[in-house]
Image 1 (cartoon, rainbow, N blue to C red):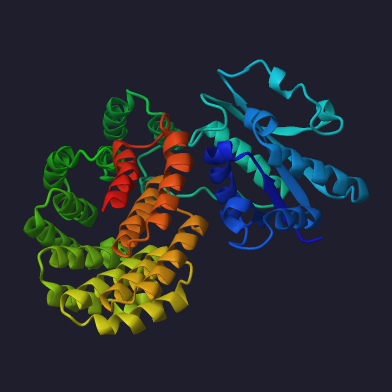
Image 2 (image 1 turned 180 degrees about the horizontal axis):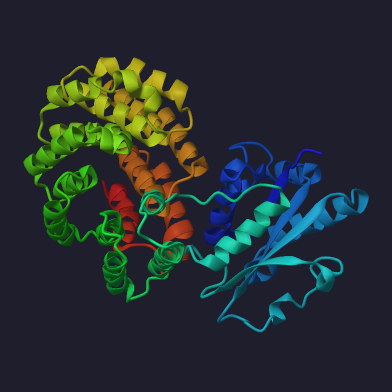
Length: 470
């Protein structure tokens, strides 16, 4: 029987539910949840009851909110129990998220919500600080979602791979003077540091600096260990600190394209545009050396950054000229790179009063990536230029639906929603802005206010309020 998974959860638990859902989708599980997958019109109750009837597995996110604050959850689980009586091959999968401060002793699970509840196995997603609200990246969550994916015979695929880790593994494999024990110590230390980072340990930075010294003592003196520190500092927007470190590394590794590329990106963040251009062009030159063959994979992103600088400087023709060098490399671009490539062209065309060229450009791009919310937003802006608010709104609505279905990091979700709220403000569609405001407040600000939201995330969420005042 084809696997069809129904995911049942309380809306108050949107934080943890959203993460599990996307991890399952990314790992290849055919999972359905009402917030994203229900049609915009029609009988909602009829739709989800039909999905329960036809599912092969029913995931229940067992929380205080599920048991005490949601009438719909009771309807869903009771429906599945009735279906399972007729079709015992259908499986119930219980995922428990237990609150730490609210009824931590397990009393909240005493109610017999499912038959033989005390005999039912469950996957423990750990203890949270607030009921249902968790979005960290700790090992407990990783182990739990790994077990969940195993039920569906799928391999868990985390949201984002770590380029730095791959570089470390590649380099360690060719350093002959390191013993196998030393290699394992370096890899273990690296993983521990990543974990400390995710847990927001106050000692993370000092430990990373000690890790760099330890690597040097073990004769591992390459640039890669420093990348971990640069990643950490840049995530905190400490670009001036990054620049100082990179200036020192440039003397130590004068022919390393990664150092020069990093320096270009840091200068870009510090608004040192001419310096950024110099470093990017130097990095391209160094990457063409055969010994740096692997670094050629970064050339496309460098070209996009150079184009972004020219756009910022108002040199739109120069930006288009750089982008034209990527015309024959479109198939090499990642999805994010391709969308930027189209976005930058569209922006330059508009600035040069060639925005009529954008209709074919954007429609062709949507043929390739119809799920891209940014492309629909750009097409909506094209119709705004044409004073066609109806078509603009149609495309903005498509962008909104696609944001809900896409798989972003939390910060990127927020940025996409806020960008779209700005677009709706131009068509004076306050109803849609309020919808976005509600999503950001309930699904992000309330759920993650004590979790991993940055100050920039919170600032962006509250920015939507200003669009309602326009």
